[in-house]
Image 1 (spheres, helix red, strand yellow):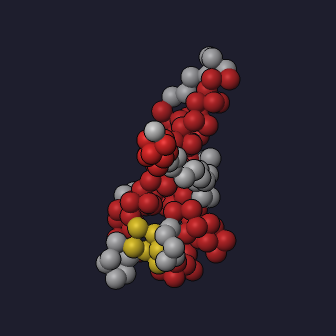
Image 2: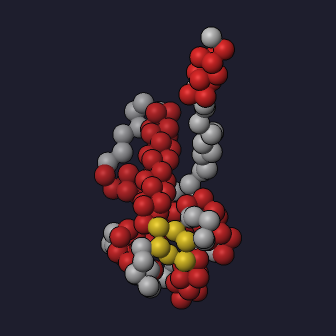
Amino acid sequence: MGSKVEKLGKKSKTPPPKIEYPTPGAMEQIEKFLNDNRWRLVDLFKDLDKNKDWRVKRDDLARECRKGRLEISDSMIDELITVLGSKTSKINYKSLSKGRTSHLSERRAQFRGKANKNSSYNLNYNQQLEFFLNL
């Protein structure tokens, strides 16, 4: 009987805890850039990915920021790499896309929170667009 208990104990390992980070502040600037230039996320990623390995290095991202295309500070780049990047200080497209999805979800939740505070708070399309661009 003792062997059954040991076997059951081995099978019921709990997975390690998953740490949820808030979306990086740089995602706000990336979203603003995409909207202003009417680009898709994949277009920006391909432009940043100089060696075409589907990973963007911190240096590539910092270079684009120094050119003035993206308004992201060095500390925001570090935060973006920490939250979305891998141990090699690179960001792949999949993690950047997930980060953008998370950022947009948070923005929608903020919008719903403002709309729910006042039940007669109905915004037309232009007011909604202005709200999202000013966050």
